Amino acid sequence: MANADLDELLAAVLPFAHKLLSADGGFFPFAATMDAEGSMAAKSYELDEAEAQPERVLYALMESVREETAEAEMRAVALCWDARIQAGENDDAEELTDAVAVALEHVGGEALEVFIPYGPGTDADGELAITFGEAMAAERRPSLFAGTDLDEDGFGFQVEEREDDGPDDG
Image 1 (cartoon, rainbow, N blue to C red):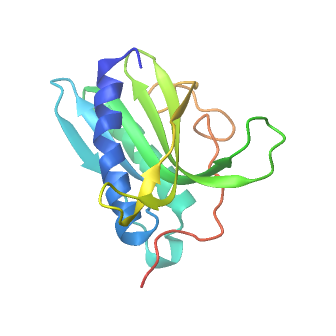
Image 2: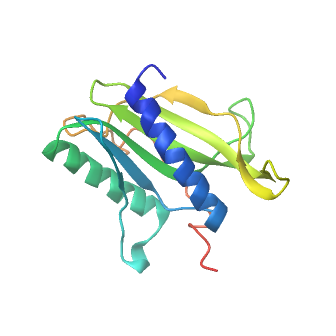
């Protein structure tokens, strides 16, 4: 990435996502922010158990981040969620694969969406582990900072509804 702040945020959220995937097989959306001095903070959002679906948590977290950027000087934000993406090399691919999705945005206007496919594999010791595939990134329209316009879908990207709505309880 061209922006060091976004690189730093991505480097901070990916190990945490990996830890959650390894422990629970999935995770609810979370965020990270970088203030004007470069300090980072993790953010989560809890809804009542009846409302705690990953998509609802993500949208509530997005609103919370937008409100925070209006109240405090932020340099960059990252939203991270467990996603399903097309696995093929063309848009006609019907197969979906699990991926960590990260929306990154800088106060200067740079906005990216990064997808890192994941699945079962083995670690350096030959033990079963979650492994990440090759990251894919694309520019997106800025929408996470207060003052940016929201489109009719809300935040410039859509969340694929998962059949397994979040981490296992057991």
